[in-house]
Amino acid sequence: MQNCSGERVISMYERMVKFHIMSLHELRQCSGPSISSALHLNMEQLKKALTTLFDLYEVNRTSKPMHKNEAEFHAYYVLLHLSSESQGSLCLWFRQVPPETVKSTVMCFARKILRYYNLGNYRRFIHTAESEASYLQYCIIEPYISQVRELALSSLNHGGYKLQPITLADLSKLLMMKEWDIESFFRDCGLQIFTDEEGNKCLLSKQTPLVSPKGALLKCYPLDSNRFERVFVEL
Image (cartoon, rainbow, N blue to C red; front, top):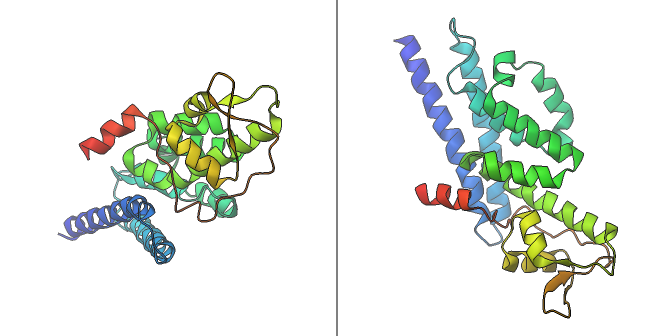
């Protein structure tokens, strides 16, 4: 009976964690002065629930080295700590994770995302997220997609040639965004859109430095992905 109740408590906390993860995405779609504090509170509750869940895994561990869903929730933890201020504690945390968990498919995905984020490899970060992320993983890394898109724009703006503007159609494929979302994103970053002689909207490089959008974590543009559109419909 004790083991049965332990499994029930674990299942309850797993559902709690998933609820808070989905709430991250839903709250980012809202607007208003209280959204920032609501996001912060939800994140705090998410991290507390996840910490308790890890403790429950340990307390209820039997002869099996890993609970059936343990790797999934460890991967969520990694994705929640992509920001630079979390890197030190994340390195220490990895030392405590069982090898079986680290080698799991979901953890391999999370480690790839972490590596591409740290390297500033925006192309692989975006395309790996689009091709491999689950819905819940996407809900977590959504704001980081915005950050790497901003990094991509900054690199193209500073490193490109003025005489070779980049069309919004090409940027749409690179950043995996709808063209109308790119136009809004440009405005957020303080960049101007130019039209070439053929009528194509373009990014002209060497513009003034990008302005990091205020409240960027609250305004996330969706991935232009047929795969994710199917996932969202199924939900």
